[in-house]
Image (cartoon, rainbow, N blue to C red; front, side, top):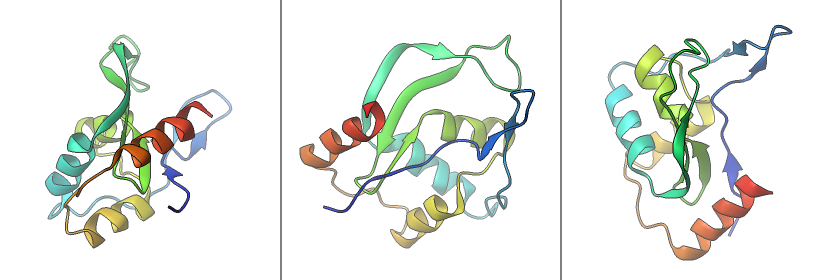
Length: 121
């Protein structure tokens, strides 16, 4: 199995701590398919609470979980910010999802365990 790739919701942070995203928008023709994929891939880690929204800190509704499809691992914040603000996932993740025809496929136990290791270090 090749190395899993962790996909972050942002590209970095400004000096004031605000998130930076420099990515092309998700094509509106495929946005719902991308969201469905991101939200329905198996959850490999999950907390019982929620994190603050980086753009509206009074709201604590960002899922504290991680999903994987066996190739990429991403936090629940990735689909959250796409759905709420249109913030795109990294282009490589979108290309990967499209190349799979928006089908998650089977994610075996080994891939799930590798995803947990990737996230927890």
